[in-house]
Structures are given as structure tokens and as C-alpha cells.
Image 1: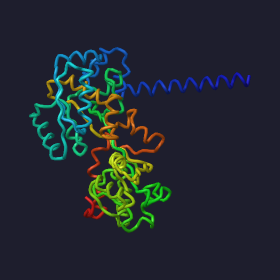
Image 2: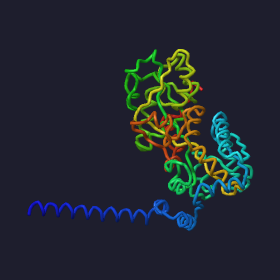
Image 3: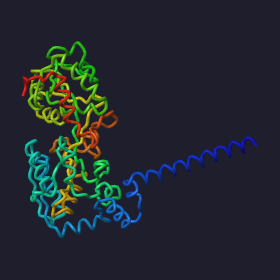
Length: 384
């Protein structure tokens, strides 16, 4: 009887757990339209549900290709390097030879500000795909065409990792990422003496011009995602009290470390360090990832709402998210592949603790940088 009672209790618990699981699944479907749309087995019903929510969705990839073929043209304003986007254009041309593709580069905050003003005024006529500047992300997003890229990615209509897509706006895709690291000269500082945590930079042995710190602390700002604003301000003050060598820009700082003028950089872009290390004939420059390492989503692209070639634009974004294009970003970005792709950035942080500055926090990056700079005491760079 005891064995039977025990068996009955186990079955009772199992049934309760099953009921709870069903309850939470149904609740998720009810409260989260993204899950509800992805869960629908009928493509036409899914399309109708998306449209009822104000989004544009398609039932198959063939439909998108057919409409892009009818459009026949694509204009891209890219935030990637010319070396990268030229090869992406070649990749796109091989996949869709019926498209006439033109791409130009956009660089600098002034150009981004002009683009935003033109988008708001509805005067952008020359482009179909643009990138949302991280500093003005929330202002760019309303200018997107309301494609449900997330839903189409979840259903396999578009071959895009859903984690690359903004879960709230559903139509903006982060196609790259920026990993941060420290850098040091191994001939001046042995590996075992390099910092293993961010607090290690506050040790007495690193006081008094012993390391370089950048006055535009984008990487440092990203740590606020994990540690909070109070930690950021307090840490920045302590870092300034260490009396570092202030710099503006990573390439110049990497060169100084490589030639042995300085031994250590507190926080740099991993790709800037690796690019400089590849050109260092002495092999002295080393790039080291300290945990938790900040990673920032980048190159957040979208289809603009008044484009005459929206479906060609969709295929372009899908192509950029493809394994082939991500390899291009690693080689010619360089090292700019998405954290959510099977690329060198994902490989570099595999098994490590990372802090991701993602869609929800990107808008705070400029504010966090300004907080850190104020805590630094508004220093003047001696390296630039």
C-alpha cells in the first residue's frame, strides 16, 4: 500500500506540474504577441495576426524573393567599412543577380544627425536600408517600415537569428557586435602581472601613469549594464585617482603600446587591438579579455518606411545576417560579427561571462559615457 500511495503522490505532482506548464504557456501566448504569432501553424493566419497588430508579415521566403524581383533595385546606406560592404554586395549579387545594388558608406555623428532629420521630414529618397545610430536609437526606430522581421525570423521565413532582432520594435536587426578587451605589451608586463578583473586596475602597482585610459569610455559605459550607474561613477573616480595616461582613440594608443612607450591599456575595442597586433612586427602587443567583458550590439539596420524597394531591402538584411556575411565582418570588419552568429566574436567569449549592451540599453550609452567622463574630471588626452 505504501508503494501504491507513493506512486499516486508522484503522479499527482506530475499532473499538477503539467497543469502549471500549460497555464504559463497559455499566459505567454496571451500576453506576448511575439510568441503567439510564432506559435501559429497556419502561415496565413500568422500573417493576418501580424497585420492586425500593425506589422507587415509574409508567409514564405518565395513571396519575398518574388516581390524583390519585381522591384529590381536596392540602395543601401551602410555603417560597415567599404572593405566589408563591397564583399557583401558581391555576395548579395550572387544570390540575387536580378537586383541592381548600390551601396555607400555613412560615417560620423554629423552625417547620422542629418540622416535622422531627413528621415523625420520624409525627404530620404535615395536609400532603402539605413542604420540606427546607437546614440539616437529611439529617434531612428519610428522611421522604420513596420516589417515583423522578428516573427518571420522565428518562423524561418527569413534566415535570421531572432536574437539579432529588437524584440520590442521587431523590425530592427543588430548585424554586428563590438567586444572590449584590455591590451598590454608582453615585453614590458608579464602575463601573470596583468589585471584579471576591473578592480585590479585600482591596485597600488598600477598608480601613476602605469596604464592608458580613453576619455571616450564606450567600453567602460557598457559595464553599467551589469554593475549599475553608481558602480560606474565610483569606479571612474577611482580609475582617475590612479593617474592614468589619458588618450583619445584606440589606434594611436595601440601603436604606443606596441612600440613600448606604454605597457597597458585599461579598456579598448578588441578589434582595434587585434588589428594592431596583426601589424606589430615585434609581436609584443597582446589583447586580453577580462571578465565580465562588455559586448555592444552594433550596426542596427532597418528598412525605411517610405522605400519603394522594401522586399529587396529585406533580402539585404537577411544576407548580412548569413554565415557568409558574418565571416566577411570577421575578416574585413574586422572582428565585428554578431555575438549571436557562429563567428569569431561568439568564439572569443565562449564560456566567459559577458555583459551585453543590447537593444534595451543602447540608448543609455551616451549618458553613461558622459557620467564616466564627469567622474574622470574631464581630462585632456595626451595621446590622440
